[in-house]
Image (cartoon, rainbow, N blue to C red; front, top):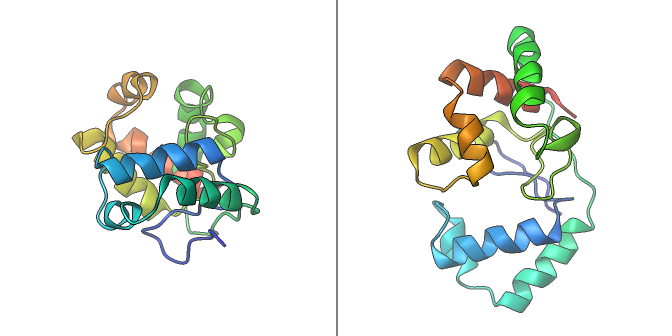
Length: 150
């Protein structure tokens, strides 16, 4: 039902249909870095991807409970407000242009940020400007903040 069972995969229940379709099409076209999903996405028709998007968008999002560092969470909250809140609203619970970040596995979020910062996956322009101003400790703090959210 779109709820991740392991730390390397995101929960996709409750994400927007538009974001799901865009992401799957990017996987399918080889425009987004992936280890497995790109191969799977190539097997789906565009109509099947749209049907899955509708299905997962209709499911209830369930964040993961995980161990976080309170000091990093506090720092991450401030960094989120300053750098991320415009696009990842309500502490990362809502996003028109991206997936839900609040309560995602921190391992998954780390993998995604590694892909973005290494250039394996292109960041949206607005995000790239903000991320370039952050250091590794800042990114880690933001990930702890999102990991602490329910």
